[in-house]
Image (cartoon, rainbow over all chains, first blue to last red; front, side, top):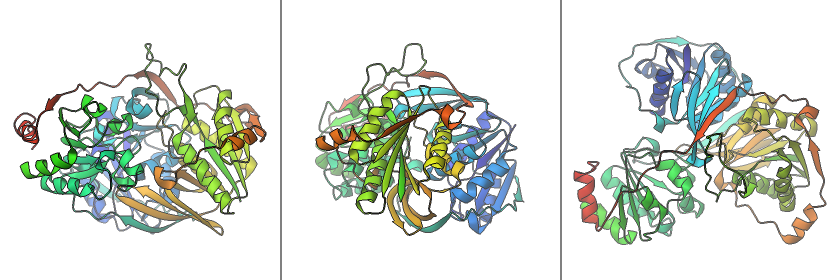
Amino acid sequence: MTILVIAEHDNKVVAPATLNTVAAAAKIGGDIHVLVAGQGAGAVAEAAAKIAGVSKVLLADNAAYAHQLPENVAPLVAELGAGYSHILAAATSNGKNILPRVAAQLDVDQISEIISVESADTFKRPIYAGNAIATVQSTASVKVITVRATGFDPVAAEGGSAAVEAVAAAHDAGTSNFVGEELAKSDRPELTAAKIVVSGGRGMQNGDNFKHLYALADKLGAAVGASRAAVDAGFVPNDMQVGQTGKIVAPQLYIAVGISGAIQHLAGMKDSKVIVAINKDEEAPIFQVADYGLVADLFEAVPTLQQAV
Amino acid sequence: MKVLVAIKRVVDYNVKVRVKADNSGVDLANVKMSMNPFCEIAVEEAVRLKEKGVATEIVVVSIGPTTAQEQLRTALALGADRAILVESAEDLTSLAVAKLLKAVVDKEQPQLVILGKQAIDSDNNQTGQMLAALTGYGQGTFASKVEVSGDSVAVTREIDGGAQTVSLKLPAIVTTDLRLNEPRYASLPNIMKAKKKPLEVLTPEALGVSTASTNKTVKVEAPAARSAGIKVKSVAELVEKLKNEAKVL
């Protein structure tokens, strides 16, 4: 068995989710190869070669792969991946965008967002917003799988010494063009990688009030998230959304502020190690999953907490 | 320009589902069913394109049981012109659905296909991308903005850490994210009118599509429950617990 892991990267550095994906591959067992498709991504390939457990890195360096356009990357992955037992990618926006296109090209069903490996062909994944866990078995010759990063502890980024092999294959479908990108500029850690996450819900009342959470987050070195209700109400952008339809996080400490605890939000954060809930409604469902609940007005409690930590 | 919208009948998003005692799946008996929320956004976007004069006809399609006609009628009431049901009582995988949609695309030749990014039952997030692979069209997934101009469409996509805009040659596939639009409600007169709009029923056999699958669901279980902790009385007590008991600060 040889497993192909698609590296998540920005042509400069390997994204942490790649380490969780390699961890899932290691659980399946067998040789692990990593594909780096990008442009000017030599440094990414060098870094991928050092990931513990990786035996070979394939570097497909071509302008057509610069922005991870699925129309170009999927044919590359399908062509290279056809000879592998498994193709794995992190369930990031790139992984979710590209991998189903690969699966369809290989004429196999995909298994999305696995949270555990039962055996080389059987995996667990959440369905119904995490209200049920399905065990799925695949009979496909190539098993195409996205991996939920929070389900697997990352492997070490250092320690390996894999060879880097250049792949010449160039696919440019000519059906899509990259126009531009607007990435939120923030000195705070990325939501899915942060050790502490502070999230706000509808109880924040408006977007301006999120300043209280930013101040607390900066004191704690935390990332700031939001519930879908807060996003739908227009308080904050969608990329801050924690939940089944947003980001899945599992930090050491999750502080839910003014969040009622809708099932779709719980699906995105219930695997956090310690959950704190601050809400003035003592009946809020969030208290049913919180390790520490504080029934209080958030506009008093949050600034006090910021002073106290 | 013809727009094809694919929708799915799913358990209503307000329903808390329960796993069956025999672990064969979730219990959907007597449970409220609705149009998948991301599909509602897809229908709304198509209707807005028609209102802007960009789309000339909206065809809505669903792959599912006979009862999915209810959701197709809802889409017709919201502004779709006609509906197609590819009837199948089986629980189909995303690839099987994508193959059936490909057959409908071949038949209808739409310039734009809009789908929800994911269904809230199986949570797969695959069908749109797979349809794009099978048709060879460009894909704009997780869309927060769709602008058609000439023979291309600019799609702004929700990505990790921000937004990305891609330009796709038409025909193209778009899948919707939450912030693309806010779906309207159907008015009573439009619900009445929708009853008279055409609804064609097809079968996978008639479309010549095999729905065989390489995935098998072995069992479905309830997730491990997380037990409630304690209530603290003050911020000071909270900080003390986080430092000394949980040791996370």
